[in-house]
Image (cartoon, rainbow, N blue to C red; front, side, top):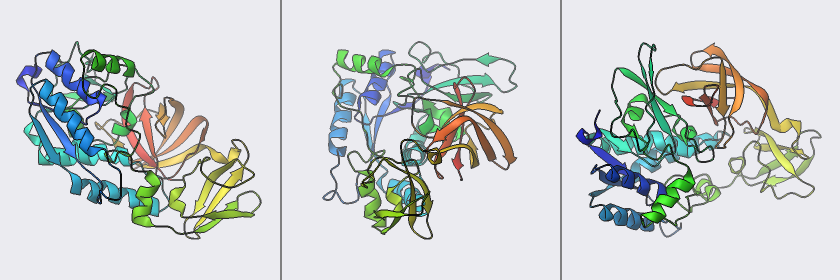
Length: 379
């Protein structure tokens, strides 16, 4: 497929990555439209939000290349869908990932319903690549989304499209994309997915792109500088309860709400005689159990179940895999035992720190190249 024949929309966030995406496409003679997804805090006077600056940057980059910029308001959808998902999970004592669901429900979901359906492809600044394989599996045609093959890539509905990792292990974002649907991946284009972050910044500086020196966003997807605990407090308030040492049953203090703490957490406990690790929660009794010392064994798990496995393209994972349970550069080897109906028992090769119910366990092949999808941990 020649991309010159396709309608392409670029999701501009106001950051350096999506700005370089637009540059890469324009450099190849394409003239995509640009879209800025508008989402902000419910009460702007309460929270510091950088969305105004983001839109200014997106406007500057789109004007630089003479591209149309459409502001698409997904404010209500974000708060109704992603926030509801997050609060329901943490209220139940689970550890959700709002950014994962933001990609599925907003960037490739609500946006498509509102505006993206007018386009054949949606280009984003994610650090991920794609690859295609014939349906019968007899031949493999690798089509990484890089600057050399973007224009001449041959996308076809008769082929499986795989979500594959970026060569930059620190920036790789396939774990954040592991809940998207096949139809969403079919429309996805990742023009900088083959690059290292330093390459992207170098291009932005060389081309004098407005966001070249902006720092990467560290907050929740779309919510900028909003602190996660403030986000939770806004909806759930506080609910004090006891903090108890697991091994001795001794009460060592009080927490302000179990939803402010995650399994494996070490920092921010605020108790003397540490370090303390959160190792267990009793939601009914509103008790947090902690273990004392440096990396206690109670903070690790090697075998744990996952349910509701979501396969991105319908292909189920093999027995020997690698995985992630959080956004880190490391891929952990493991064996999967199928329990049927989208359930698996994970047998990791080594104990994993901070395994928490509600987290997504993202599954890759042994070479941590192809991403199969993800399931929710259900300890």
